[in-house]
Each structure stands twice: as structure tokens, then as C-alpha cells.
Length: 83
Image 1: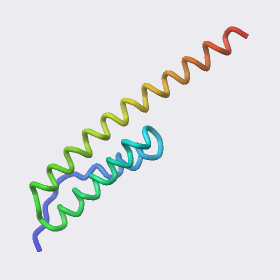
Image 2 (image 1 turned 180 degrees about the vertical axis):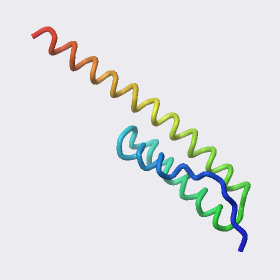
Image 3 (image 1 turned 90 degrees about the vertical axis):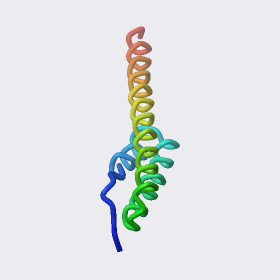
């Protein structure tokens, strides 16, 4: 059975799921698993499509997560600086 070697982004998806943005992390894990399954079956087009979607979701989740972390830190320090 042939297999392809398209990147699945599964580790990044799991980190996004746990640390950055839960909804986008869940979707990224799903697409990463689809890419992995398509890789194993040798379906290059489906693997490439799912991999691309997982990458986009991971980028969005990471950006949103970083922005939220920055906002929380700014709000925390501005509210505590007034005390």
C-alpha cells in the first residue's frame, strides 16, 4: 500500500488545543488526523488539502492565543499598577 509524506502538523495542533485556542485546536487536530490517515492510504491530494487546512487553523489559533495572553498580561498589570 503506497503512502505519502505530507506534513500533518499534529504536534502543533495538540499544543494549540492545550495552550492557545481550544476551538481552533480541536479543528486542527481533526484535520491533522485526516491528513495522517490520507498519508497512510496514499491519497496525496486529500492529505495535502487536510494538511493545508490544519496549518491555517494552527496559525490562526497561535495568533489568537498570543494576542489573548498579551491582553491578559496588560490588563493584569494595568489593574494592579493602580493599587
